[in-house]
Amino acid sequence: MSENILNLKDCLDFYILSGVDETCGDEPYACLKPVSEEKNELTKNKIPYSAVAGIESVKNAAALCQNISSIDELKKIVENFDGCALKYNAKNTVIGDGNPKAKIMFIGEAPGAEEDMIGKAFVGKSGQLLNKILAAIGLDRDHCYICNILPWRPPGNRAPSDAEIAICLPFLKKQIEIVKPDYIFTLGAVAANSLLEMSETVSKLRGKWMEYISGDGRNIKVMVGYHPAYLLRTPAQKAKMWADVLRLKNEIDKNN
Ligand code: URA
Image (tube, rainbow, N blue to C red; front, side, top):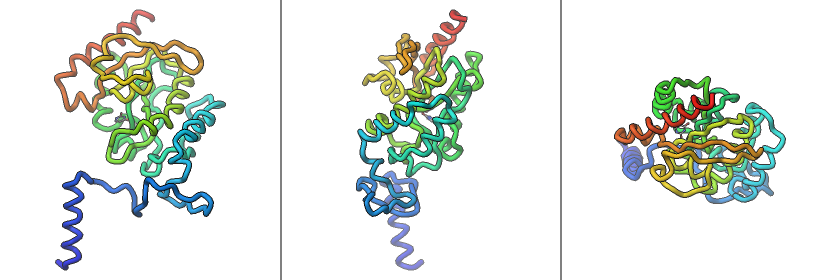
């Protein structure tokens, strides 16, 4: 082995030890430095200036959503949206899965590796557990609409920043207006806190009905639950999740 190859191996070992276990693109770039718009230097994998201009991006996302009335239209808008840097590391834009006319909406955090690869929400291990949870109360994806706070995977599944959540929230809110669910079940703290504008643990918020008022003035019942990924890591909490999805089922049955 030549010295260069040995150095390369040492370098990769160092990255792995430091927690860097995947590449985000073929070419390095400075993700915190805006690319000059004047010189029109935008190329694949370079982040446009609008992507780092947080407040403008939130306003743009909300404005772009204004006259949309279908999930297909929304998907096109989100795919063409340049205001969130996450898009530039993701393979796919992941909007909701399931039935866009469903009365029940499940909201997670962000696509993971499998979801990013395939372009569909909750298809990996968390999604498989979610399917089982749905089946346990007699539901499947035809009965629900399943989506995320963010349509793009944060690199390496890192936690999304407040700015990324704020930028993408208008897209989620528009999905709620289009689908018009009667019930929302949030999965994990990021989904609950982003939707309800709170800053609490799931343990504090779960177990009781809460309320979300959609942009079109509808009162939607919200139940906060644990994220399936957390349940996979902490199976002892599955009993609480079971109690929460039963609350959802009982409420649906009561009103049918
Ligand atoms: N975790 C989420 O929050 N959403 C997905 O779509 C997959 C995993």
